[in-house]
Amino acid sequence: MEKKNFIFVICLVLIFGIVTLVCFSNGIKVKDISNDNFSIKYDSTWKVVKNDKELSLLHKKSKSTLDIKCKVLSDSFIDTKLSDLIDDIIYSISDQNKEYKLINSSSNNSDNYESYSYLYEKDSKQVMVNVYKKYTKIVIVYYESDSEYFDIVLDSVDSILDSLNIIVGEK
Image (cartoon, rainbow, N blue to C red):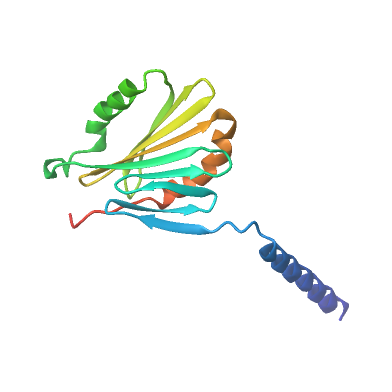
């Protein structure tokens, strides 16, 4: 009998803890946004600054920025791999941002997209550039932040990137 009472008390304490946690949570809500080229989910720590063909988000506390742009290629590129295009894309980005130094690069081939990620730095800023391709669409994501906030906000950015859905017609 004592064992049942003990388990009952433990269950009550757990339920009370969960209810308290839910009631006093920080109120972060997830929002959806989309255009003709892509859709994402982002949390309420971000503010939409621009939403048309490109999307710009501003992190409310750190003032970090996340810009998402889409380039639609001609149909002749539908079967072209991103690996065949990435050198030209990165050259163009690097040429426009000569003051930034490349720190790291990586590639990823998931079930959804072929992608590349590049990390740059300049003074007290860090920039991550991710490039994704699906059929004839290339999506380029720029995340820029002061170095002191870069890793802190990166989890939120990764959640946004995990939700990225590139919208295409039938293949």
